[in-house]
Image (cartoon, rainbow, N blue to C red; front, side):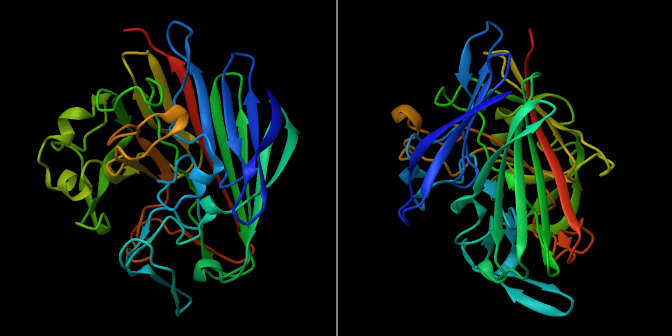
Length: 355
């Protein structure tokens, strides 16, 4: 793998942001900027060898800085997804975070990891070169405890996989739940919606939500519901099912309880697009994955090349600890103890499948 870089833009605070192109021997490329660790493009061949960009995004840095950016392609932290009432307790002490979705805390708050400029370094590994981004979140940022040293490493392998390795360590007990928020459309970004895509999620259960998309603590079986993706299943029928959970989320916006051991990198999901033949497999060390069908994208969102991204123009598969886990103690804990190392991996692997 080879990496090249060039200036992408300058933030409104005057910081230079660079774009890094990762390329492999199979013609696949990924472009990542050190603002928010954002995956700007992911160019992948279809069954006929045609290359398309399969992630939604913007052409300009100013659009990524815009408050209406729906987290396209970004690193999410310190805590991905929702924390109810923006509050949690560690060691008997209450921490009140910034609320940025009603009364709740979403995706790290007002200025999460998606909105900071990371230090970038190109380093050598067994695949050639990889991109390592690092950021130290100071004690009290967004009201989280502890100075948190974070590294996120992107590797594009020669078997057409984008591997993301997460590392963090804190000097105080804190909570950490990092993920990537890429929106995928395997037909190519801007080529219609994703409702004809088929999805498999390696999960027999999901965490039920309320009208605010907050997990209630109930872990519900997928069998016999539109949440059953235990085999490759078209997305569209479930969206129009009238199922209470779909109504609450305005589509799929749910955490699935993965059938994994939690000890290794294991398969979490697949997405298949019959039109292009592209297959994406998702592997992770995390216990959960958020399946989101772009329910809040709207026609006024203008993306790369002037493309208008409407509702359901892309889907997300965000590997994670369960949302709202600090309230529901039977969920896997996102607490990171002082000096303990947070190490997790997510892989998005691409191939083609013939009908």
